[in-house]
Image (tube, rainbow, N blue to C red):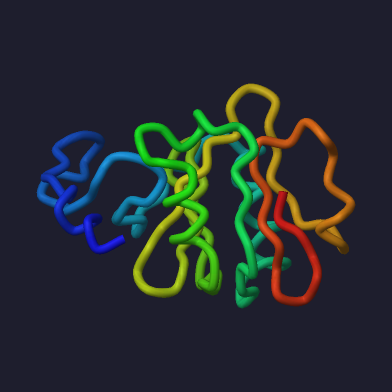
Length: 141
């Protein structure tokens, strides 16, 4: 985890010029002016804002290991565990989940994906790529 600061670089794409970031799941983004597109992604964000902001991630589980590339899935699980969801933003097709400690987890729904909160984390489907257990027993899938 201490090695994360060594992987920072300058980002010069998509209007993020000059912002410090590193490749993988966790990024720093300026989301002051989200693009007004993709209503289904915005609908997912609005739903998550109502249900997930303020919840703490008790555990993180990356089932499909390649979705965190180039970051190690175990490192991502370790970084996410114990953090609180502070904000949820959208930047284009990306959902940005702001976590305590200044980290932002970037989620892309791909072609048929969804992101939702279930009343019990044990109610997840078997083919899920990643899931998070929340502090009140709910699950973010």
